[in-house]
Length: 177
Image 1 (cartoon, rainbow, N blue to C red):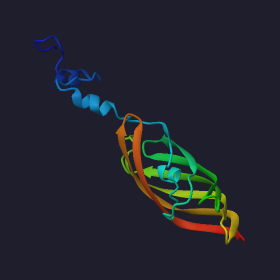
Image 2 (cartoon, rainbow, N blue to C red; image 1 turned 120 degrees about the horizontal axis):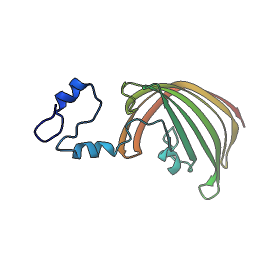
Image 3 (tube, rainbow, N blue to C red; image 1 turned 135 degrees about the vertical axis):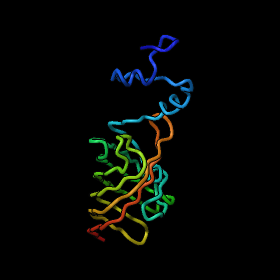
Image 4 (tube, helix red, strand yellow; image 1 turned 90 degrees about the horizontal axis):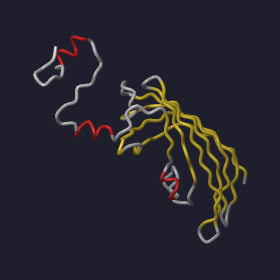
């Protein structure tokens, strides 16, 4: 069955059991939504606060290069792998900060539609080492930590998104002076 314009109506297509998509007269909303990646398999990102030198305790030191990759599976699960590195003198050469940090964070996404956006919760594990040197002290050592995380991911445009994340947990640090 077809309508007067030669095209099958939506109810007729439903009756036939086809999966053809009906285009609405106003497809601008479809195009705007098409700019967002709806069903990602993986992503690559960075932490801008670490690049400008803001550390987790909100103190400013020196910049740290960092990168993360996240892999998505089973509509609501993902695993984030993160690495950070810094080895720089700052404050006119009086201070030095060097560290490496590696994080693994499995996540559970609250939305069940495989879009991997909105709220998520997870657990994380972290390993690393550090050197923190200034005129009065020299600290070096290794650390590890584990805890819970929660956050929100907001897609902005095409493959670009903004994520807000908070972590709380336990950290064990071996300090050598």
